[in-house]
Length: 229
Image 1 (cartoon, rainbow, N blue to C red):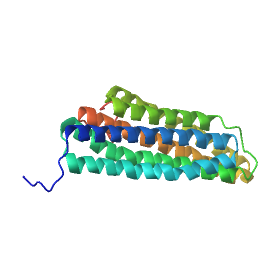
Image 2: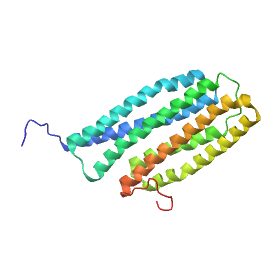
Image 3: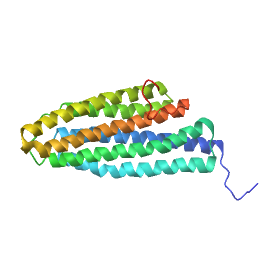
């Protein structure tokens, strides 16, 4: 035996696993908050709040790096197998989706800052509704991951259709504004971007849910028709 290599007890391994679980939960909670506060900044036309959300993205990025490092540490030092291996490798992928969700929240805030410089085009009704669904999808996808709950993961995937339908509805409505009055094109285009950012958040939540199904069932459901899943 090579006695120069550090020996790792089961206790250390369990502590490292708990640390990863806690880190992923914390990151998931933070990006949920980023989505909610980005939409608050948009609806309330609160530029100061938007800047706070943008500044907080650095914390999301730090968590992304820390969680990746924890996953790599577990793989390198403990050589996990079976369910632990699936949990860790799935966690490694999930951090990427969570970081991108955080980026989209920042993008919403950047468009909010621009929209606050011009008169409000219309009351925001469908966008907050769409964001609420996407945010709940993020929460449930993380809960499904932590609980090995493939049924909840499938429910997340099903809700993506609601977000897509709202995105299309908003697109058609804003297109009509631009057709009727060219002066609305600037604001309407920015709102179209916001709708697209929310749609991408839902897509990332769906990615996480699909990875959970693979982790639990060993079944790849990405790019499959829902009836096949």
